[in-house]
Image (cartoon, rainbow, N blue to C red):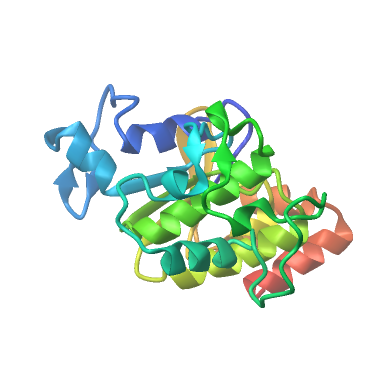
Length: 232
């Protein structure tokens, strides 16, 4: 499900409510018919994964960042890094460690500073995504998780997420319409309420829909691309 809306429409609040960082004042949140308010916080949060817009990473090593409880072997961790394109999918000659072009993600013992300050926001988001691939929870929440990467990387990551989480529910708060245009459903929020919820192709076939107008506002060329991607 793609979640769209202007700033202040309630997108991030909705995402946080799944983890009970924000408790509902009315109504319920059900996951597989189970009311999340009846589940202990530790149990609930261990079964969900969120990739936030501005992730905070604890200090340590790349290995401890990606595998907090030492559950995975190095081969699995490296494969997750490849899946999010932090290291090449096809091995190239190893860079010398003292060169400016050395890929720090090739060595799992490399240090991660407090808050992950030695990495860019985009790199931290991709590290969180690699961790999510290792964890493989049934619900993945992405809060503008690719907003800090370029279009090409965004598309590659989107493809990876669709493949790796084909059996999971994905809730994506989108910064770019292309990110969610081929999702099963899109949800458009306004003032904390659902204004529209349907298949992208259905909404794009209705010139009066808010989603249609939102896509059209991207410009003629981009609008044509969005319609093609949605199968309209």
